[in-house]
Length: 279
Image 1 (spheres, helix red, strand yellow):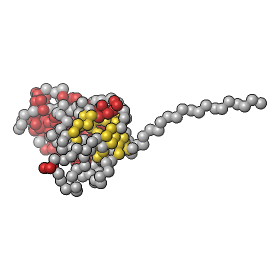
Image 2 (image 1 turned 45 degrees about the vertical axis):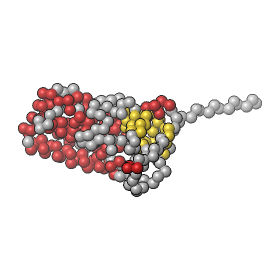
Image 3 (image 1 turned 90 degrees about the horizontal axis):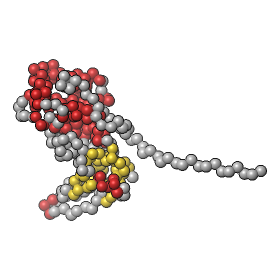
């Protein structure tokens, strides 16, 4: 079975299908055996033509940075607004129904009703190879007070075209890199959670909303920091200083899997040499 990834709530669950069936990935990992999802019958008012019906199953992605697709948009986070979630690694087979996923969920994504949970991986993987920097930004944002966010917003407002130039140059470079690397899920997730990190003090039509927007843009760009010139990131991120003088790293330091990286082969026990024959 091929390896895939899925994002889950902090209790390790996901809900699938119109009936919101709960799939407990944490429990599946603990049990360590292949899990099967029973398909429920659709209600009469939920029945659709075969070509329009989304397959019933768990949506999985071949790379962690794609797991945010379908989970979050710029301002709506279905996993909560505290920036906390878990990512699981699974081995799975696609469901038998023929289905070509929409671009919104990734061309290589699959739906499955048969999977084996093999590991829980660092949550920052959902933000891509530079996810530890995204997490560092989220931690820094969550520690800011209202007056600090207000100062960021007012500074941006006063800067006018100077900020706009840095912003759109960085976003243009990031858009190209995100599209080329296939990381729209990571970018949308990062932007959404960065904005959400400011919600405790956010007010509509205030300088705080501008600070939230800028924070989201910085997080968006950070998802492809490994593909951009560092000065592209710095020109945008410096607008958060001195309140955030430097964006550090968050999460455990574990190597992000390379695209298409094969699963490690199990180590074999060395064979013992046969005893020398007696002369």
